[in-house]
Amino acid sequence: MKRNILIVDDSVQTAIQLKTSMASHLKHVDFNFTLFHDGDEAFESIAKGDGYDLAVLDCVLPGKTGVEITAELHRVHPTTPIVVVTSELQFASQTDQISSIRCWVLKPVSMDRFVDVVERIWNESSNPA
Image 1: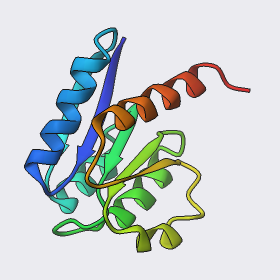
Image 2 (image 1 turned 90 degrees about the horizontal axis):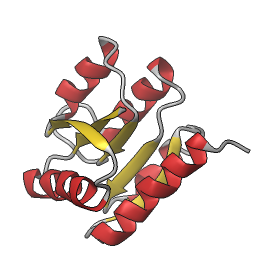
Image 3 (image 1 turned 60 degrees about the horizontal axis):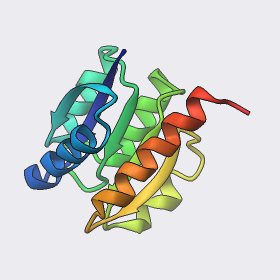
């Protein structure tokens, strides 16, 4: 089964590292990645109904912020797990009521930690309590 992954980060380098880490460490999963480097494009994709199995979002973006994208994704697809990858933890208080956020990962990102987080999220969603 293909996993549709949304990655939104204004740093092209970070977005590619996240994508590459997932693809190389989780070889048993077939991925379809959608990358945006601008909040407006990601927001439009979500608003038009594009569905994702996982969203990886930065908070500080050109256009719509990660907070706005998180809120829209939660509104349209409330069960899509979200991982926030950021250096700006002050946004945590703006999103603390959004249950779709499964984890905050601080930049600079440890790719091993990031992959562990993704695996944990998928294991939890496939084995609900």
